[in-house]
Length: 159
Image 1 (cartoon, helix red, strand yellow):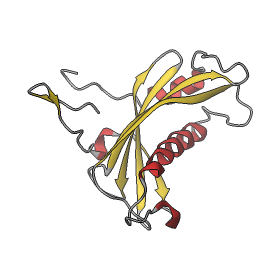
Image 2 (tube, one colour; image 1 turned 120 degrees about the vertical axis):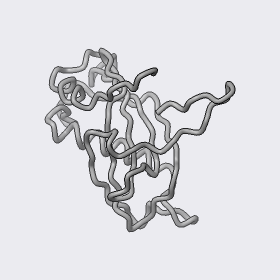
Image 3 (cartoon, helix red, strand yellow; image 1 turned 60 degrees about the vertical axis):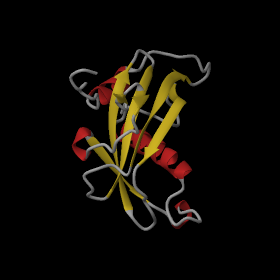
Image 4 (cartoon, one colour; image 1 turned 90 degrees about the vertical axis):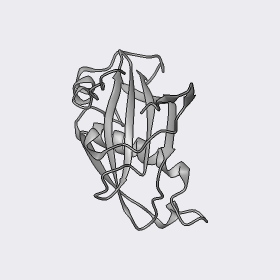
């Protein structure tokens, strides 16, 4: 989700297309997600990113949040907003992987109003996977790596 340069100046990030995400998770908005301006507050989007990715990993059997020896710690996160979302809308979170390292993953998540072709918001976050006890980075366990491999984004020509 990089923005192009125009005369040396970065352009604003653009909404992402639905078909650029291989997996989706539905998210129910809550009354308390809205703020005084009548739309979902910006901090809620980060919670949705985390929820969508972790739900996918748990469903794939790649993450055991209670007894697993490896846990993911968020070290970076960012979001661009393109259109408002509000309760009681249903939101769909598209998930893809932009980079898969030895102990880290960069996830990209697009948030869509149900059925929309362009994202209302798009962002990323980076997990570094660590040993639960020592909190030191460890190689991605094979079941986790396999679940993430299928989400790897194809690099467009010229990137």
